[in-house]
Image (cartoon, rainbow, N blue to C red; front, top):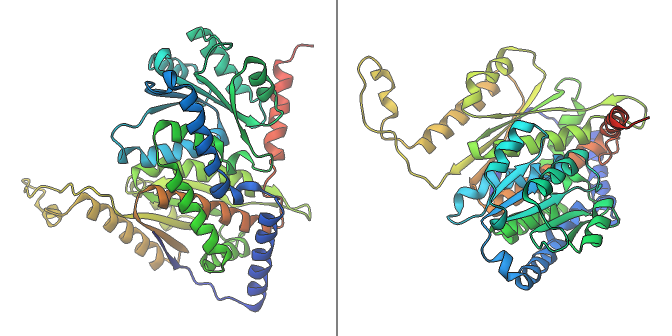
Length: 418
């Protein structure tokens, strides 16, 4: 369960109410008319789980004994999966290791290759377009490095759009392909086959993740989550006053979630609006209490241009305590003795939030009762809905990324021969 607390002064005018009602209607229209398919993923992706069961049963000799997944993908093809993997893996004893091949950094690639036993590894290649240069380049290297026989290998899986070059490649070699719905963009795709396939193969309870997302979606469209629209209205109405959106998560295992958020928020909301104006909300992600000793100073006494969201976990399901030990000359911190680290971290979160409120900095908080699959599914869909709502209120196309595509074209020119 996730609770929501708001600590920003937002007097709802009649025009705001109309704006929120219109935005709600637009989100409902997007959902019902397939403008973006992510709304349907919590329900539709359960069919993928059945498809995985059939495929692994038919290839039991391979999928019974593997220990590692090499996931080759970048951006929307990896960030969401990595976020869920890192947030949830400590809940399992026998989870398969997922090694992420993302950035074409030769040192990282070389180190990751050393971790792989090709006879105990499943290779999953993910590219929505089917021609992502970083992904295909790394895949070529792994084919060469491990002498992968594509015609006979059941250890290679691809995830891509139907009819893409990667899909055609897979058909040619008889490689199993899981399809991404055409109307689901990469950064909104974690609850599609992009995340479902690797996480399910690794041993995660993916159905509970999908259930968490589905329950929040139903609650939102039943008009029970007005707080999300109030937040979107505030962020977009005062975008010039608070152009920077800070996500402060008080759990190390959510660090990759902040990276997923940064892509989702930045790539979706930094656009030219329908009136030709540049708009956007700049995202930044931080970990408490580490970044209390750095970035917090900028928030407290720097420019008042930031909206801060805290994510707190009430119960880490770990009762590790601070020992009742008094150290000579630093006895002043003995007041914390015998308290749990869980209590310390959450007290720091609360204290930081209170300090910002005292400075009239707009903040809100998402409180997870624990870090489990259902809550993470809800958290994913919450941010996807919030992003869509902000996009509607900013009068932009939330789902395109022309700025990114322009950079890809320049890259191609640098390598193509005359």
